[in-house]
Structure formats: C-alpha cells, structure tokens
Image (cartoon, rainbow, N blue to C red; front, side, top):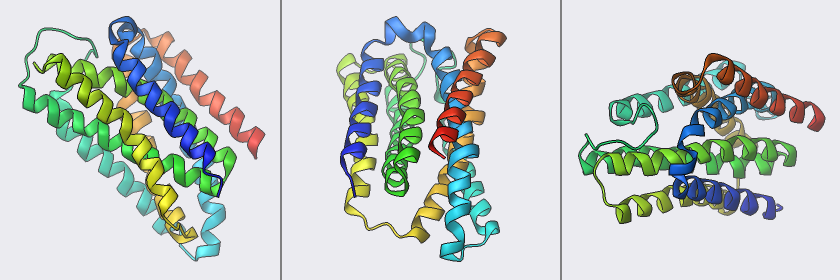
Length: 246
C-alpha cells in the first residue's frame, strides 16, 4: 500500500483546519462560500464516485444492495443525531459575537467537529486503499469541509466564553483528528467486506454533511445565487474529476 498520498492528504487537512481557525477574523465573511462549495463536493462525491465503487465491489463480497443502503441510512442518521444533538449550541452565523454560552458547552460542542474530522480521516485512508483517484476526490471534499470546521471551532469556543489559549488548543485537537483517522487506516488490514460497509456508511454521512448541514448554513449566509453558484462549482468539479478518473 502506498502510504504517502494518505499522509500528505492528512497533513493538508490538518493545515486547512489550523489555518482557517487562525485566520478566522479574515475569512469569517467568506465561510458561506466555502460551505456551499464543500456541500457540492460531498454530494457529488457520494453519488458519482463512492456509490458506483461500492456497487462494483459488493458482488465480490456477496453483500446485498439492501444492506449497502441500510448502512448508508445508518451513516446519515448517525451524523444527523450528533449534529442535531448539539445544534442548539452552534453559532448560526459562524461569526464571533458576545458570549451567550457556557465554556463547558463550547468544549462539548467542539468535540462534535473533532468526531466528524476523525471519520473524514478514516474516509481518506480507506478511499486511497481502494483507488488512488477515489482518495484524491475524498481528500478534496474533506479539505474543503475542514476549512469550514477550523473557522467554526475557534468561533464556537470564543463565543462560549473560553479563553484564547483553550480555543487554540481545541483548534489543534480538531486539526489533528483527520490525521489520526487517516493514520488509523495504515495499521488496519482492511478487507473488501469492511471497505463496502465503511464506504456505504460514509455515503450517508457525506450526504448529510452536504445536504443537511453545509448547504443550509450556506443559504443562511449567502445570497441565493452565490450559494447555488458555488454549490454547482463544487458539484461539477467532483463530477468532472470522477469522469476523468473512471
């Protein structure tokens, strides 16, 4: 297995999270554009690349189509339950304002971003093990989302009354989460059976990230034409890459 692409992608995801958080004041007004672009990437990736690869691999493992879609539904429901469980603590405009939340709530809520990031790191590693082109596409989507997470993490921590030191500490934890997820896959012997269920779970998760989380955020923060335009840009970019790699 070629581990270099996995490691490099994880490092880029780390840098995207960290740089976005550090530059939160500068980029906070553009987070809606990043959300729209990332939403298009995740939805197109799920439909045009992950799902076809899963269905092509499934006959070798004798996994039924029904089980694949059930796994995808579980992935969607899992992210939905985590996200909605913390949604009342999230800053709705992704900007820093007067604190209205308790510091501990900010810490707990920020842990959600870390759990997302760890799953995305797993997705990078598993995808590269399946196909190099698939790994590149997953990495593009994940890095776009991690840029959003970096801004959200620092804004949420500061909004909830945490110190700058604590906020930066959680930002670093969030930045390391995809690296840890990707490195985990380097020490696992991943069978085709596990890959099918893992990727189908991620299909549901990515569909929720794109359509259930990022896209609504983008609509709140952008004009309609801006959201649609950057969503289509991300969507068509992944579609183009997927067709070239096919």
